Image (cartoon, rainbow, N blue to C red):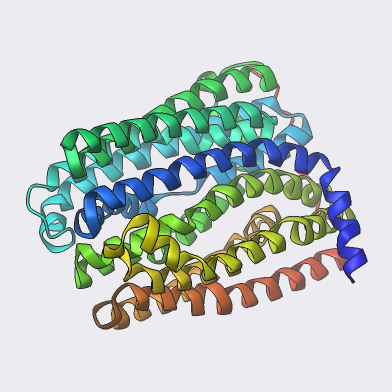
Length: 456
């Protein structure tokens, strides 16, 4: 068994997958280090209460966006990969236009919705007067942020991982410098908000410019001049995919953002500050895993479209044994050092964050071990299952949050994540993934839709 794993590791290092993923992952490691430094320094400067206030101000627009986010980036990667394989530039350009249009529309709606709830949120969630304006201001950053998702999808499908990595790193540096300088200068919570806005805006605009160049190079024109008519015959399928991914994202708001808002409502900003620090300490996992998923997804989508189950299975095995399981093991070991780190580096006033940090590290390790499942489901088009899975899991999580947030605070939220999101959910999803793959291997290959629309 050990020799087999070693062979898989050696083989994985030599694949193009690792070469592509290493570009994004290397940049994300630097981004993670900068974000880690930012989080630790800002937490120690602001203290638990003010750090929690800043986190809650950011979380409210983030939660509203999560409610409305159509996950166009997932649809864009799936269908751009298919249209690229088919040699259909007209459809690819139209798909880009559709994705950007939806993203901008959602960002505008989010801004209006946040503006409407901000006065209530400052009193009942943030528990700090004078923060309504900061909540609305941060929501405004979601307008340039609308360029981010679809642009990353285009760069991923085009294979421009280096450009994407540079843009992410530059944006993080801008955000880090802005936050630290403004907080050090005495701007406090406002400095955190303005600095994060600078980071989000820089990332959206830079990725949008890079994606525009990739679109011209890959498909010979601008998506602005494309026509939705080019998607004839596929529109229903695409909107079905978008509909289910939107419902899935809506269901997942509970575990992604609503946990912080619920904790702020019942426990106040100090408990939110403890929980926010725990999430910040484990945030490196997401910044490492997300680029790996970005590289994995289009490959799985291509293998699925070509009914190449052998290539799909080999890619999954290499990813699981060469990447996800070793990363999960490393994260699990961090449980034993997080307590002393918080005490001696962040400060003793954050010692109550140590228990919940250990729980969150355990939950994160379980998620990383099975992080390949979601890209696989998207590649297979199993968005209906993802929606049902997310709906049940997150309704159960919501019930747990409401039961435990007031009595157990941040630790209660952490235990719900570990039991439901870290153990029960992954077991169910992995079981269904293998079942679906076995079904596909024994079924006849689906017919591919042809594209007779000439490029414009």
